[in-house]
Structures are given as C-alpha cells and as structure tokens.
Length: 152
Image (cartoon, rainbow, N blue to C red; front, side, top):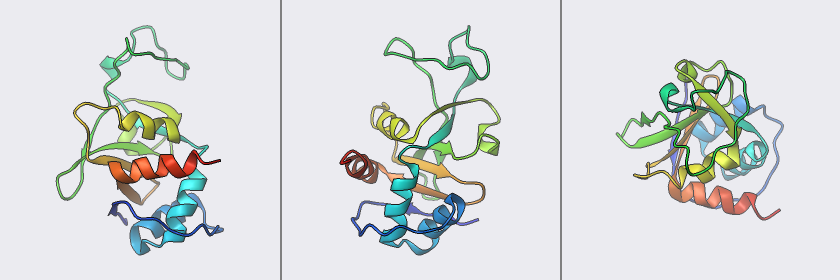
C-alpha cells in the first residue's frame, strides 16, 4: 500500500491514461505535477463515500436513500490520524471500502472538499482512499483543488 500527504504546489496539466487506482498510487509514490493535475480532473465529477457516525443521520433515513441537508442537520464524520498524527477526514472511491463499514454517505468530490473547509474544529486535511493506495491533502491544497476545478 502506498500513501502520501501533500501540501500545496502548482503544476502543469498533462492527461494520463492511468486508472484511478494507478493515479492515486502515482501521486503518493512519485508526486509528479501531471499526476496531481490528472487526479484533480478525474475526481472533479466523481462521487466519493464518506464514513459517518450512524447515529448522527436523521432517524427516518433508509440505506440508499438520497437526502438533502441544511444547516439544521449536523452529520458527524469519522476522522482518521495520519502517520504524523494530523486529523484527516477520509473518503473512499469505492463503496465497499473497509473504512465505510460503520456507515457512510455518498457525495460529489467537490462537495466533500467544500464541506471539509467548514468543519469546526478544522482538520489538517482530507484523505482520498483508493482500493489499496491513499493520498492526503492539507487544507491549503484543498483550497487549491477547488480553485483549479472551478475555473471551468
């Protein structure tokens, strides 16, 4: 399993033909600008799955049901600790990920990133879990990802 935590830096835009798992691995292993940029583009319209505290979901929600929340609903997300001890909000690219065994919600990647900036107290960043590899981004990079994905 490969992993990596990355802070903000910019890079060139070069497309690759890697699948998502290979791309997450390459970002964690090689830290190439073109892989970061490809990952941002690939994830922009993707759905991710976020582990949540089951008891924080509205009582009438059934598995698989779509819900829309507002500020009156407070769904608590699980956090994980990075190797350096920082708090990260995880999400998975696959619904069968072991990190989701206690319950989860699905949402757009961009929505997940936007939500991570509103958490109080703020986490160090977010973690994107692939099938075997993962990569984490600090909040400065989260802001950068949102900035570059909103230019379109």
